[in-house]
Length: 343
Ligand code: TLP
Image 1 (cartoon, rainbow, N blue to C red):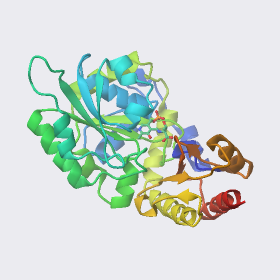
Image 2 (image 1 turned 45 degrees about the horizontal axis):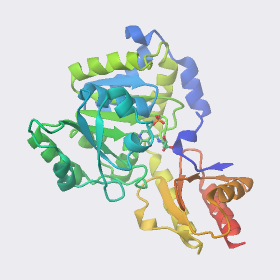
Image 3 (image 1 turned 180 degrees about the vertical axis):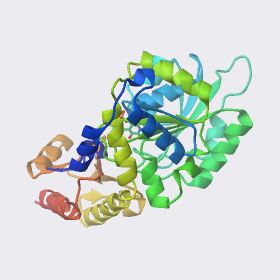
Image 4 (image 1 turned 135 degrees about the horizontal axis):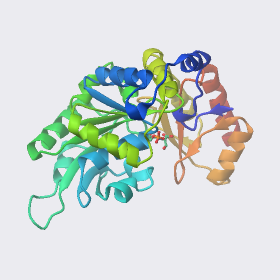
Protein backbone atom coordinates (compact mmCIF):
# COMPACT_ATOMS: atom_id res chain seq x y z
CA UNK A 1 0.00 0.00 0.00
CA UNK A 2 1.12 3.54 -0.75
CA UNK A 3 -0.46 5.16 2.29
CA UNK A 4 -0.85 8.89 1.72
CA UNK A 5 -3.72 9.36 4.20
CA UNK A 6 -1.54 11.11 6.75
CA UNK A 7 1.95 11.48 8.14
CA UNK A 8 0.52 9.89 11.29
CA UNK A 9 0.66 6.44 9.66
CA UNK A 10 4.43 5.97 9.83
CA UNK A 11 5.78 2.99 11.77
CA UNK A 12 8.93 3.23 13.89
CA UNK A 13 12.06 2.27 11.98
CA UNK A 14 14.29 -0.58 13.18
CA UNK A 15 16.83 1.84 14.65
CA UNK A 16 14.10 3.79 16.40
CA UNK A 17 12.78 0.55 17.88
CA UNK A 18 16.29 -0.27 19.11
CA UNK A 19 16.51 3.12 20.81
CA UNK A 20 13.10 2.44 22.42
CA UNK A 21 14.16 -1.00 23.63
CA UNK A 22 17.30 0.43 25.26
CA UNK A 23 15.52 3.34 26.98
CA UNK A 24 16.09 3.87 30.68
CA UNK A 25 12.72 4.33 32.34
CA UNK A 26 11.12 5.43 35.62
CA UNK A 27 7.72 6.61 36.81
CA UNK A 28 6.98 9.87 35.01
CA UNK A 29 4.11 10.81 37.36
CA UNK A 30 6.87 11.16 39.98
CA UNK A 31 8.97 13.00 37.39
CA UNK A 32 11.44 10.12 37.57
CA UNK A 33 11.68 8.89 34.01
CA UNK A 34 15.15 9.97 32.87
CA UNK A 35 14.38 9.53 29.18
CA UNK A 36 11.17 11.57 29.40
CA UNK A 37 13.10 14.25 31.27
CA UNK A 38 15.80 14.27 28.59
CA UNK A 39 13.23 14.57 25.80
CA UNK A 40 11.44 17.41 27.60
CA UNK A 41 14.70 19.32 28.17
CA UNK A 42 15.78 18.78 24.59
CA UNK A 43 12.48 19.93 23.06
CA UNK A 44 12.22 22.97 25.34
CA UNK A 45 15.79 23.98 24.43
CA UNK A 46 15.10 23.58 20.69
CA UNK A 47 12.23 26.03 21.04
CA UNK A 48 14.20 28.42 23.25
CA UNK A 49 11.92 27.76 26.23
CA UNK A 50 12.37 26.37 29.73
CA UNK A 51 9.66 23.74 30.20
CA UNK A 52 8.13 20.91 28.21
CA UNK A 53 5.57 18.27 29.13
CA UNK A 54 5.19 14.95 27.28
CA UNK A 55 1.58 14.02 26.52
CA UNK A 56 0.01 11.20 24.51
CA UNK A 57 -1.36 13.26 21.60
CA UNK A 58 -1.41 16.59 19.79
CA UNK A 59 -5.06 16.94 20.69
CA UNK A 60 -4.20 16.66 24.38
CA UNK A 61 -1.35 19.18 24.07
CA UNK A 62 -3.69 21.72 22.44
CA UNK A 63 -6.42 21.07 24.96
CA UNK A 64 -4.10 21.38 27.96
CA UNK A 65 -2.95 24.72 26.59
CA UNK A 66 -6.52 25.92 26.11
CA UNK A 67 -7.59 24.68 29.56
CA UNK A 68 -4.54 26.18 31.27
CA UNK A 69 -4.79 29.62 29.63
CA UNK A 70 -8.52 30.13 30.13
CA UNK A 71 -11.49 30.03 32.52
CA UNK A 72 -14.89 28.52 31.62
CA UNK A 73 -17.08 31.15 29.99
CA UNK A 74 -14.26 32.86 28.13
CA UNK A 75 -13.64 32.89 24.39
CA UNK A 76 -10.65 31.94 22.24
CA UNK A 77 -9.84 33.06 18.69
CA UNK A 78 -9.18 30.21 16.25
CA UNK A 79 -9.09 29.81 12.49
CA UNK A 80 -12.32 28.24 11.27
CA UNK A 81 -10.73 25.21 9.62
CA UNK A 82 -8.14 24.61 12.34
CA UNK A 83 -7.61 21.26 14.04
CA UNK A 84 -8.95 22.68 17.31
CA UNK A 85 -12.24 23.49 15.54
CA UNK A 86 -12.64 20.50 13.25
CA UNK A 87 -10.93 17.49 14.70
CA UNK A 88 -10.86 17.63 18.50
CA UNK A 89 -14.42 16.49 19.20
CA UNK A 90 -15.45 19.85 20.62
CA UNK A 91 -13.01 19.42 23.51
CA UNK A 92 -12.46 23.15 24.03
CA UNK A 93 -16.18 23.55 24.77
CA UNK A 94 -16.64 20.22 26.51
CA UNK A 95 -13.52 20.20 28.69
CA UNK A 96 -12.39 23.83 29.04
CA UNK A 97 -15.87 25.39 28.83
CA UNK A 98 -14.72 28.06 26.39
CA UNK A 99 -16.46 29.39 23.32
CA UNK A 100 -14.64 29.38 19.99
CA UNK A 101 -14.56 32.55 17.92
CA UNK A 102 -13.87 31.46 14.34
CA UNK A 103 -11.94 33.58 11.91
CA UNK A 104 -11.72 32.33 8.32
CA UNK A 105 -8.22 32.69 6.97
CA UNK A 106 -6.75 32.36 3.48
CA UNK A 107 -5.71 28.68 3.27
CA UNK A 108 -5.73 28.72 7.07
CA UNK A 109 -3.71 31.91 7.53
CA UNK A 110 -5.40 34.71 9.49
CA UNK A 111 -4.30 38.33 9.22
CA UNK A 112 -3.55 40.57 12.19
CA UNK A 113 -6.49 42.78 11.16
CA UNK A 114 -8.87 39.81 11.27
CA UNK A 115 -7.58 38.76 14.67
CA UNK A 116 -7.86 42.28 16.07
CA UNK A 117 -11.43 42.60 14.78
CA UNK A 118 -12.33 39.36 16.59
CA UNK A 119 -11.11 40.55 19.99
CA UNK A 120 -14.08 41.38 22.22
CA UNK A 121 -14.40 44.86 23.70
CA UNK A 122 -13.60 45.27 27.36
CA UNK A 123 -17.10 46.06 28.60
CA UNK A 124 -19.39 44.35 31.11
CA UNK A 125 -21.66 42.84 28.42
CA UNK A 126 -18.96 41.15 26.39
CA UNK A 127 -17.45 37.73 26.73
CA UNK A 128 -13.67 37.91 27.41
CA UNK A 129 -11.14 36.96 24.76
CA UNK A 130 -8.62 34.78 26.62
CA UNK A 131 -6.39 33.23 23.94
CA UNK A 132 -5.39 33.42 20.29
CA UNK A 133 -4.54 30.09 18.60
CA UNK A 134 -2.52 29.70 15.42
CA UNK A 135 -1.73 26.48 13.52
CA UNK A 136 1.64 26.28 11.73
CA UNK A 137 1.84 24.56 9.33
CA UNK A 138 -1.90 24.70 8.72
CA UNK A 139 -3.26 21.23 8.03
CA UNK A 140 -6.64 21.88 6.37
CA UNK A 141 -5.16 24.93 4.65
CA UNK A 142 -2.91 22.48 2.77
CA UNK A 143 0.26 22.44 4.89
CA UNK A 144 0.54 26.21 4.60
CA UNK A 145 3.34 28.02 6.40
CA UNK A 146 2.46 31.06 8.49
CA UNK A 147 4.69 33.88 7.22
CA UNK A 148 6.81 35.03 10.16
CA UNK A 149 5.84 38.64 9.42
CA UNK A 150 2.14 37.72 9.85
CA UNK A 151 2.89 36.03 13.18
CA UNK A 152 4.81 39.13 14.29
CA UNK A 153 1.87 41.38 13.40
CA UNK A 154 -0.62 39.13 15.19
CA UNK A 155 1.73 39.07 18.18
CA UNK A 156 1.81 42.88 18.26
CA UNK A 157 -2.01 42.90 18.39
CA UNK A 158 -2.02 40.25 21.13
CA UNK A 159 0.51 42.16 23.23
CA UNK A 160 -1.44 45.42 22.81
CA UNK A 161 -4.57 43.67 24.13
CA UNK A 162 -2.78 41.58 26.77
CA UNK A 163 -3.91 38.25 25.26
CA UNK A 164 -1.64 35.16 25.28
CA UNK A 165 -0.99 33.10 22.14
CA UNK A 166 -0.86 29.33 21.61
CA UNK A 167 0.79 27.68 18.62
CA UNK A 168 -0.53 24.34 17.39
CA UNK A 169 2.86 23.30 16.09
CA UNK A 170 1.93 19.70 15.30
CA UNK A 171 3.92 20.27 12.09
CA UNK A 172 6.11 23.18 13.18
CA UNK A 173 9.19 21.30 12.03
CA UNK A 174 7.79 21.17 8.51
CA UNK A 175 7.71 24.98 8.55
CA UNK A 176 11.24 24.95 9.97
CA UNK A 177 12.49 22.58 7.24
CA UNK A 178 10.87 24.63 4.49
CA UNK A 179 11.96 28.09 5.66
CA UNK A 180 15.21 27.14 7.49
CA UNK A 181 14.11 29.50 10.27
CA UNK A 182 15.07 28.04 13.68
CA UNK A 183 12.07 26.74 15.67
CA UNK A 184 12.78 29.24 18.46
CA UNK A 185 12.24 32.10 16.03
CA UNK A 186 8.64 30.98 15.67
CA UNK A 187 8.21 29.92 19.30
CA UNK A 188 9.30 33.27 20.77
CA UNK A 189 5.93 34.76 19.81
CA UNK A 190 3.86 32.23 21.77
CA UNK A 191 3.24 31.58 25.47
CA UNK A 192 2.65 27.91 24.66
CA UNK A 193 3.56 25.65 21.75
CA UNK A 194 2.37 22.11 21.05
CA UNK A 195 4.65 19.86 19.00
CA UNK A 196 3.91 16.40 17.58
CA UNK A 197 6.53 13.67 17.46
CA UNK A 198 4.18 11.25 15.73
CA UNK A 199 3.54 13.11 12.45
CA UNK A 200 6.36 13.87 10.00
CA UNK A 201 8.97 13.12 12.66
CA UNK A 202 7.92 9.47 12.61
CA UNK A 203 7.68 8.56 16.31
CA UNK A 204 4.84 6.14 17.14
CA UNK A 205 3.26 8.21 19.96
CA UNK A 206 3.79 11.52 21.68
CA UNK A 207 3.41 15.27 21.69
CA UNK A 208 4.84 18.01 23.86
CA UNK A 209 3.44 21.15 25.40
CA UNK A 210 6.20 23.74 25.70
CA UNK A 211 6.33 27.06 27.56
CA UNK A 212 8.42 29.45 29.63
CA UNK A 213 5.69 29.95 32.20
CA UNK A 214 6.17 27.70 35.22
CA UNK A 215 2.76 28.42 36.78
CA UNK A 216 0.98 27.67 33.54
CA UNK A 217 2.94 24.44 33.14
CA UNK A 218 2.07 23.41 36.71
CA UNK A 219 -1.58 23.89 35.78
CA UNK A 220 -1.09 21.92 32.57
CA UNK A 221 0.54 19.08 34.51
CA UNK A 222 -2.51 18.88 36.81
CA UNK A 223 -4.90 18.94 33.86
CA UNK A 224 -2.81 16.27 32.09
CA UNK A 225 -3.56 14.07 35.09
CA UNK A 226 -7.25 15.05 35.01
CA UNK A 227 -7.47 14.24 31.28
CA UNK A 228 -5.87 10.83 31.84
CA UNK A 229 -2.65 11.69 30.05
CA UNK A 230 -0.15 11.22 32.90
CA UNK A 231 1.91 8.18 31.94
CA UNK A 232 4.28 5.97 33.91
CA UNK A 233 7.33 4.34 32.19
CA UNK A 234 6.88 6.59 29.16
CA UNK A 235 10.62 6.68 28.50
CA UNK A 236 10.09 3.97 25.89
CA UNK A 237 8.02 6.50 23.92
CA UNK A 238 10.29 9.41 24.78
CA UNK A 239 13.28 7.49 23.37
CA UNK A 240 11.49 7.38 20.01
CA UNK A 241 10.86 11.12 20.32
CA UNK A 242 14.53 11.85 21.02
CA UNK A 243 15.54 9.68 18.09
CA UNK A 244 13.04 11.52 15.87
CA UNK A 245 14.24 14.98 16.93
CA UNK A 246 17.85 13.97 16.35
CA UNK A 247 17.45 12.09 13.06
CA UNK A 248 14.20 12.98 11.34
CA UNK A 249 14.06 16.78 11.24
CA UNK A 250 16.49 17.46 8.39
CA UNK A 251 14.88 14.82 6.15
CA UNK A 252 11.45 16.55 6.18
CA UNK A 253 12.64 18.49 3.13
CA UNK A 254 12.47 15.22 1.16
CA UNK A 255 8.78 14.86 2.06
CA UNK A 256 8.20 18.39 0.75
CA UNK A 257 9.96 17.55 -2.54
CA UNK A 258 7.80 14.44 -2.86
CA UNK A 259 4.62 16.44 -2.21
CA UNK A 260 5.55 19.02 -4.84
CA UNK A 261 6.34 16.29 -7.35
CA UNK A 262 3.03 14.55 -6.65
CA UNK A 263 1.19 17.84 -7.20
CA UNK A 264 2.92 18.40 -10.54
CA UNK A 265 2.05 14.86 -11.70
CA UNK A 266 -1.58 15.10 -10.55
CA UNK A 267 -1.94 18.43 -12.36
CA UNK A 268 -1.45 16.58 -15.66
CA UNK A 269 -4.64 14.56 -15.08
CA UNK A 270 -7.64 16.41 -16.56
CA UNK A 271 -10.11 15.30 -13.84
CA UNK A 272 -7.92 16.74 -11.09
CA UNK A 273 -7.97 20.38 -10.03
CA UNK A 274 -4.90 21.35 -8.12
CA UNK A 275 -2.68 24.40 -7.56
CA UNK A 276 0.88 23.00 -7.27
CA UNK A 277 2.17 26.44 -6.24
CA UNK A 278 0.10 26.08 -3.04
CA UNK A 279 2.06 23.01 -1.95
CA UNK A 280 4.47 24.46 0.59
CA UNK A 281 5.28 21.42 2.75
CA UNK A 282 4.13 17.76 2.89
CA UNK A 283 0.37 18.15 2.34
CA UNK A 284 -1.28 18.07 -1.08
CA UNK A 285 -4.91 19.17 -1.41
CA UNK A 286 -6.80 18.62 -4.65
CA UNK A 287 -10.28 18.25 -6.11
CA UNK A 288 -11.42 15.40 -8.33
CA UNK A 289 -14.23 16.03 -10.78
CA UNK A 290 -15.70 12.60 -11.51
CA UNK A 291 -19.37 12.44 -12.46
CA UNK A 292 -19.41 8.64 -12.51
CA UNK A 293 -18.21 7.84 -9.01
CA UNK A 294 -18.88 8.93 -5.46
CA UNK A 295 -15.83 9.74 -3.38
CA UNK A 296 -16.30 6.42 -1.52
CA UNK A 297 -16.22 4.54 -4.84
CA UNK A 298 -13.20 6.48 -5.96
CA UNK A 299 -11.33 5.76 -2.74
CA UNK A 300 -12.24 2.07 -3.05
CA UNK A 301 -10.88 2.00 -6.62
CA UNK A 302 -7.67 3.71 -5.51
CA UNK A 303 -7.31 1.27 -2.64
CA UNK A 304 -7.77 -1.68 -4.96
CA UNK A 305 -4.76 -0.37 -6.87
CA UNK A 306 -2.74 0.12 -3.69
CA UNK A 307 -3.17 3.85 -3.00
CA UNK A 308 -4.75 5.40 0.08
CA UNK A 309 -5.69 9.09 0.40
CA UNK A 310 -8.25 10.89 2.58
CA UNK A 311 -11.49 12.45 1.33
CA UNK A 312 -11.89 15.74 3.16
CA UNK A 313 -15.39 16.77 2.08
CA UNK A 314 -17.13 17.46 -1.25
CA UNK A 315 -14.76 16.75 -4.14
CA UNK A 316 -11.66 17.48 -2.05
CA UNK A 317 -8.91 15.04 -1.15
CA UNK A 318 -5.73 15.18 0.88
CA UNK A 319 -2.47 13.31 0.25
CA UNK A 320 0.34 13.58 2.80
CA UNK A 321 3.93 12.54 2.20
CA UNK A 322 6.08 11.13 4.98
CA UNK A 323 9.07 9.10 6.11
CA UNK A 324 7.86 5.87 4.53
CA UNK A 325 6.99 7.23 1.08
CA UNK A 326 9.69 6.94 -1.58
CA UNK A 327 10.21 8.89 -4.80
CA UNK A 328 9.25 5.80 -6.80
CA UNK A 329 5.98 5.49 -4.88
CA UNK A 330 5.09 9.06 -5.86
CA UNK A 331 5.38 8.05 -9.52
CA UNK A 332 3.38 4.90 -8.86
CA UNK A 333 0.63 6.73 -6.98
CA UNK A 334 0.29 9.35 -9.73
CA UNK A 335 0.10 6.56 -12.32
CA UNK A 336 -2.73 4.90 -10.36
CA UNK A 337 -4.68 8.19 -10.29
CA UNK A 338 -4.15 8.66 -14.04
CA UNK A 339 -5.17 5.08 -14.77
CA UNK A 340 -8.38 5.23 -12.73
CA UNK A 341 -9.47 8.70 -13.75
CA UNK A 342 -8.85 8.39 -17.47
CA UNK A 343 -10.40 4.92 -17.85
N1 TLP B 1 -4.07 15.61 12.52
C1 TLP B 1 -4.52 14.36 11.93
C2 TLP B 1 -6.04 14.24 12.01
O1 TLP B 1 -6.47 14.39 13.30
C3 TLP B 1 -6.77 15.18 11.14
C4 TLP B 1 -4.01 14.26 10.52
O2 TLP B 1 -4.11 13.17 9.95
O3 TLP B 1 -3.51 15.27 9.98
N2 TLP B 1 -2.87 19.59 15.30
C5 TLP B 1 -2.79 19.39 13.98
C6 TLP B 1 -2.48 20.53 13.09
C7 TLP B 1 -3.00 18.11 13.45
O4 TLP B 1 -2.95 17.94 12.15
C8 TLP B 1 -3.27 17.05 14.32
C9 TLP B 1 -3.55 15.65 13.80
C10 TLP B 1 -3.33 17.31 15.70
C11 TLP B 1 -3.13 18.59 16.15
C12 TLP B 1 -3.68 16.24 16.72
O5 TLP B 1 -2.75 15.26 16.84
P1 TLP B 1 -3.16 13.83 17.49
O6 TLP B 1 -3.73 13.04 16.37
O7 TLP B 1 -1.86 13.34 18.01
O8 TLP B 1 -4.14 14.10 18.56
